[in-house]
Image (cartoon, rainbow, N blue to C red; front, side, top):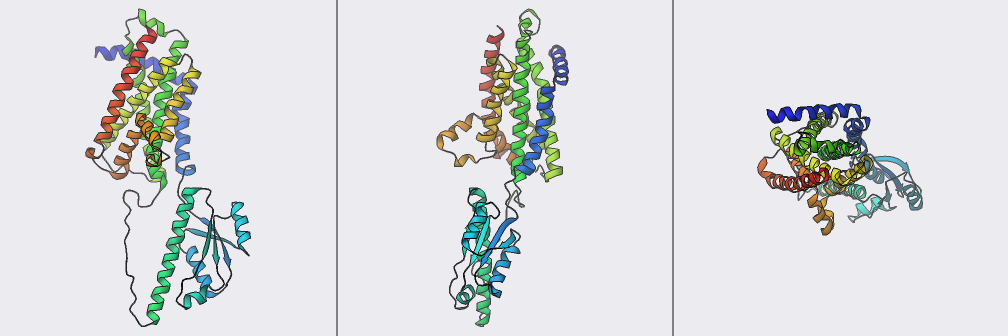
Amino acid sequence: MTLFRRLLPIMKKELLQIRRDRRVLLILTFIPAVMLLLNGYALNFDVKDIRMGVIDNEKSAGSREFINSFVTSGYFSYVESLPSSEAATQRIDDAKLRVAIVVPSDFSNTLLSNRGADVQVLVDGMDANAASTVVGYVQAVALQYSQKIMLSSLAKMGRGSYIPLQYDARIWYNPELKSAKFLVPGLIAFILAITAVIATSLSIVREKERNTIEQIDVSPIRPYELIIGKMIPYTIISLVASALVLLAANVMFDVVVKGNYFYLFVATLLYIISALAIGLLVSTVADSQQVAFQLASLASMLPTMILSGFMFPIRSMPWWLRMLTNITPAKYYLIILRSIILKGVGFEAFWDQTLYLILFIVVVLTISIRRFKKTIG
C-alpha cells in the first residue's frame, strides 16, 4: 500500500497529461481505429471476383459450356469477349482483366475424339501471390470439367461412372479462408507497439525537455517509482485498446477467441511490458519528442510490420533476416495470439514462445533501467 500511495500521484499526473496532449490522444485512439479499418478492408489478401475475358475461337455449345463452368464456379466474373490474344494482352496490360481464356477452334472435336484439348490461359502476374491463387482456381475448374467429360464418356460406353481418387478437404482454424482472421492478431501487436513504445518514450522525453526529470534527484521519488508510475497508465490503456480491437474484430469480421482468455491476458501483458521496455530504452537515447517519435517508430512499427510475420511469412525470408526477427517481441506474441485466437490450443503449444518473450523483457528492461539511471544521474 505504501508503494501504491507513492505511485498514485505520478499516475494521476500522467493521466492528466494524456488528456491534455492531443498528440498522445491521437496515437492512442485514432490510429488504432484507422488500422482496424485498413486491416479489415484495405489489407485483404482474399482473391475474389476475378475479372475474366474470353477468346472463343470455336463458338460452339461445347466451348460455351466450358466457359460457363468458370462463371458458375463463383471465382470468376465474365467481363467481355475478345477477338484475339493481342487484344487480351492489351486488356491485361491496362488492368481491365486479370485472366483471359483462349479456347481453340477445334476444342469440341478434340474432346470427342478422346484427345486432350489445349486451352491457353493468360494471367496477370504482377501480384505473384494473387496470380498463384488465380492459377489454382483455373486448374480446379479445368479439372472439374475434365472429370465431367470423363464420366460422360464412360456412361456412353456403358461402363459405370466413377472417379478413381476422391478427397474431402477440411480446412482447420479458418474454414472460410478469410484473411481478416489471420491479420487481426498482427493488428493487435501493431496497436500495442504504438500505444506502449511511442507514447512511453514521448512521456519520459517530455520530462527531459521541461527539465522536470532533474527534480527526481532532490525529491523522495525514486527512479524506478517514476518508471512504474508512468508505465501503469499506458499499460491499462494498451489492455483496453486490445480488448476493443478484439470486440470490434468480432463484430465486424467475425473473429472469435477460441482459446483461454487468461492465457491471452498474460501474453498481452508480457508483450506490453516488452514494448514499455523498448519505449524506455528509446527515451534514454532521445533528447526531444521529435527524435523520440522517429526512433520509436523505427523500433516498433517497422519491425512489427515486416519482421514479426504479420504481413510477410518469416520462413520465406533469407537466413540473416530470419535471425534478425528473433529480437522482435511481436514475433513471439503473434505466434501466441494466433495459437489462442485461431487454434484455441493450450499453454503447451506456445510455452517456448512465452519464455522467449520473458527473456526479451529481462534483457531489454535491464538495459533500459540502467541507461535511464545514468541519464538522470
